Amino acid sequence: MTASADVVGQDRGAPTLDEDQVRSGIAGLWDRAWLNLRTGNLGPLPIIVGEIIVVILFTFTATNFFTAVNFVNLIEQTAGTAMLAYGVVFVLLLGEIDLSIGYLAGIGALIVAELQLPGSGHQMNGIFAMIVAIIACAGIGAVQGSIVAFVGVPSFVVTLGGFLIWQGVILNVLEQRGTIIIQDRWINYTDLYIFGHWEGWLIAAIFTALYPLSVLYKRTVARGTQIARQNWWAFAAITIGIGIAAFGTVAIANHARVIATPEGLPLAGLIIVLFAVLLTFLAKWTTFGRHVYAVGGNAEAARRAGINVPRIRVLVFMISVALTFPPGNLLLNAIASAVIGGVSLFGGRGEVRGALLGALLIGTLQNGLNTLSVSNGWIYIVTGLVLLGAVTLDTFARRLQARSGR
Image (cartoon, rainbow, N blue to C red; front, top):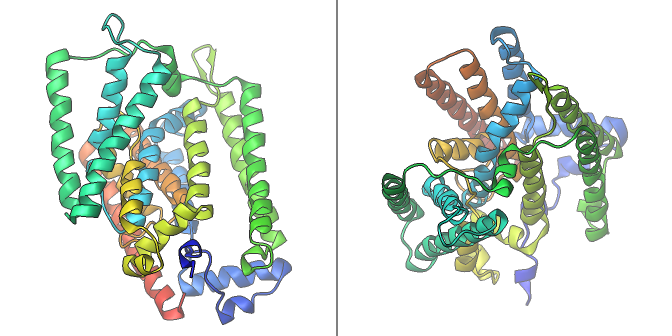
């Protein structure tokens, strides 16, 4: 048997009888919407509705919230949380937790800062410095993941130890060195670079075309299976929605001006969307991704199917870190983003796009509350209430799915 190559993720199950009865065409859209609502398969709808409500609320209550300049600021502020939340998705899909990601990301940023320091004797180009930092953080993740996978120590304990260790390393270095100024232009570009207006339009066009291309790839790879079925009305609606979001984002960003300086789409926005696309492909259309879902759903069944479960765990802990500093509340915001975005804490269910939507919701909430000059205490309270509400809704949704056999 070669079952190890055929273990599948959440999208490969056989359709239920109700799904077979879904009609084609426009009528099928309503059938699908009703079926998903009845069975608790809400997808990203609740968080999208929540984001719309939050934006409308702050538009009428917070001065300067609904402006092009603040929109660009929101993208840049959300980038760190979103990038870290992507890694959290893979860890949670295994049913594990990583409490060290915030300060481990800080270690990566510290390595970058040290390696680019002029006159240090080990100065290197900013791009190479970031590559070295990523490799170093991946190595640390591999060590922590190996302790979880091969020794059997719970991930909570291992990564809590990492949380304390890397926090201590950062404090010791900064106490001795003080603030390290980032002078390399390539490093600063990742945070501050703004695309020209026509470059932004081109990027929007490319990302709008990615969804139709992904559907074509899906139909080609899954030819002759149920996965290849496509409601073309839904396809058109999603494509139009993506186009509106992409071109709308660029239009607003291009409209921003700081004093007399025109703004545009920030590179940070391109990075978070690009990684969302790449990691979605990794999770849903590669053997590694299917194995992650399988291990998170039932590790013993995955092992019996021939999957190297320890190797999957180590690899996931290696890819769960981004380069961001200072750590601050990144850990809590990243985990909250993934959970609010629908990633199950029990493993086996969730998507990368959920982490992006969750990060946008948290970023919008905190940005709006800061614009209202609300204290940090209330910002924490509101974020916690949103997280609790999202988990409660997810719990009810899972019960409906269990009752309906989905």
